[in-house]
Image (cartoon, rainbow, N blue to C red; front, side, top):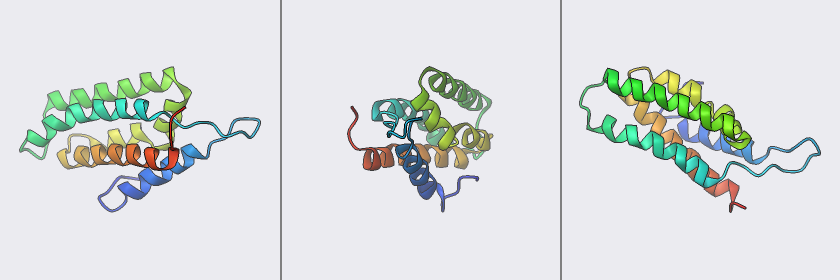
Length: 130
């Protein structure tokens, strides 16, 4: 489902609720991705966001689109390193939503807000990290 101004908050909440409800093979709850890990993903997103906000064009420059593509690779790398991050990337459909951005300034700003919502709901539903 494509992110919109109307659904990004509910989409983030649902993804985090699913992550917090995950159980291992023996039925025990699996701790969700740590807030520091998800905040690292947000920080990578925010670095691009700061440049996107300054831009006046509705179409993103080739340089910014290249940085977004690199961001996808970083998300894949982090997901490959840690199963909890992979669960986040998959349940929150981060790669799909990044692909939706294309070269749209508005869609990237929306993606950034979605990432912020994921962090907020992780803190709200996930409680304290171990």
